Image (cartoon, rainbow, N blue to C red; front, side):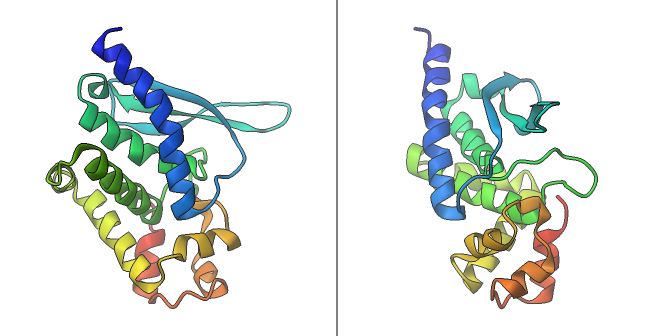
Length: 189
């Protein structure tokens, strides 16, 4: 087996382990079909792969940037981020796009897992410094969990799909976050 084939095999296993870890932190995933992972020459992403025209059920796929095939640390960083988008994936259309809350959750989990798996405590900081929006999302998420470490689970009991959470869901779930934080978290990324 080549090193690339070994990494691909590792990622196949890790995606489910990391998704299970994300579900423990953020609550259970919504109902959809998952078709697995792919690799391409663009930024990593979770996308709508297909839709069953009879049932309306959506099927999603994770695509990692192909650098993951040659760099395990980068692959773990990408994969641990993207599995968070499998918590409640949606077709990225007007009004249904990913928000700062979801990106902050993904950035948070990628930091935890990448540091744990690689013991490189500088890698994530370097990656975050290259993208101020992801750093902002991460910091906003940390602000939310300072209010309540189970905030996401509480919000998702009201509205399970992260992209559809509204300001009133914070009130309904009993979270005492200030309006500025709520607005920033729910801003489309």
